Image (cartoon, rainbow, N blue to C red; front, side, top):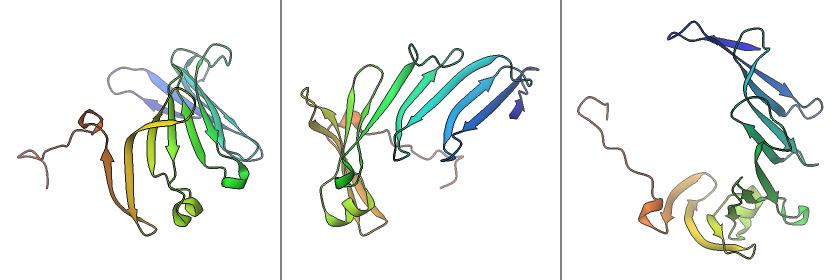
Length: 163
């Protein structure tokens, strides 16, 4: 268990990570209000599929996770024959985000995402939110947003910030 004492108040927050025994993957991340680890502040619990891929992530902002009532994000993967790549992320509100691959040999071999898209209402990828461009194995060339509102704001250096 790790602890951190806040400089603003004499409050101690402790975190505990519990790992799945065989796969050594994180299973539960818990924040405690005291160093003895008796009062749970918030918690995150992960569920993995048979290929040790994250399938469901439960999140509780106030207290311990209850898998019946806590909010969850779900992850869906393609078939094993097509590489078992991440296909969808389903948010607690039901929104589905599709991860797209352009089926180029290189991108498929390394599982590199080519676009993100909203659901079209019938379970398939609809309009693209962003398209990614690469060159070779590790050169990220750019990203193209469908609408300007999707593009993250650019930061401009101030007179005091390093350039």
